[in-house]
Image 1 (cartoon, rainbow, N blue to C red):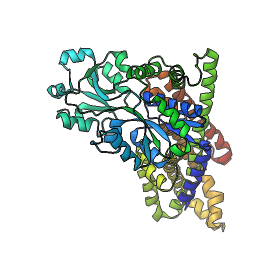
Image 2 (cartoon, rainbow, N blue to C red; image 1 turned 60 degrees about the vertical axis):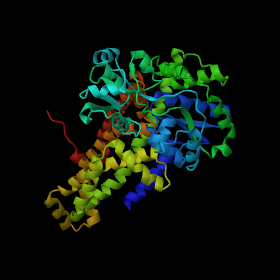
Image 3 (spheres, rainbow, N blue to C red; image 1 turned 90 degrees about the horizontal axis):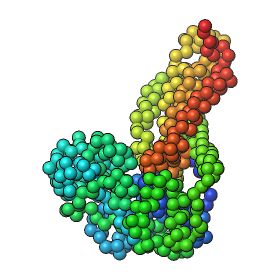
Length: 513
């Protein structure tokens, strides 16, 4: 009962916390630069056509964004035809765009015409490695069974990624030769010699920056990866002006232009909104030109971002922690008072604690969707943090009550106190220091775990950390990492000060000489 009430409560808080007003058009993008730029273009075109729009940037991988689109959590996002056929619809025979549209329409999804460029997967290596090992094509990898490959996490699991590529080319490399990591980190690994070959995208700015040698797909494994926009078919009725504006991009973005836009963000460290806005202005006369910001404008923008990240992060932590206290403390009392329930209650909390953070976010999506609740954004993040918060508070509550001296209980019974009076007036105050220690530990851990919310659009400090990671921008990453560390210290200090209020005076630690 406590858990059900808490789930409803945290969902209400999450909806309030997200501050989501009615959203006529929600644009999403995946966790890489090109998708973010295209998503920002779509959001700008929506506003230009008279529709309020929100861009949910860095929302995760194809599976998360696709599921969000089908469920109506988002309205439109950029995708690639090869990914649509092989990874989303799982039908490699869908080579014709019209057949692809018919298949998508059965799911209530529309697809624009190609935007004018392809962004196919490619394997790449450094020129000196290619020369030394005589690597010109993917087939040449067969001659080097011990070659180390650094592959992005998504590429290692996709049907159009490593599993299919290995089978198609009959490559000898085993899992021992594969280092799966965040895509942006593969470039560091390649430069440092930790791996010799990586996967990348045809329009990636790092190809030109590092002078990478691309391996020829000599057996034509990778399909066409033409960039398109996927959108809910309801937009034909709800926002026809927006779709008309969006279709202005069809056939009008070249691969060279897209690579330059990516380089402006990843190499020149310009921001995505300005890059997208200036491209639309220069090529489609949309909006106004955005000049480079002055130092004062940069500082003002930084202050606004930090305020927004801090508020969002505090909401995630406070909502999940409050719900966890409301559930874990009563459960800890129950476990201490009813010994038979202790093992099942504690074991369940321990099992939850062993689930990796990202896996828990994904596992929460189906039940939240089945309940008609948002499965991206603040709601699943708060739910995951709530589940992670249970064990420390629960265990400390149980231990604090279970380990009270028997003589103390006997004295309370001798005084004729009721069970409730003993609990409220004696046992809980005596265990308060340990309970508060569990809450403090949970709060500090939550500040760190909450950054995972950036993977599913929950905001907070996870946003700049993820952006910096995907764009190889250490400064942007530190915008989230440093405030998160400072917030953890502030939370720890706040709970230490609160001990003076919560813990009876006689139980507080005394300073020693």
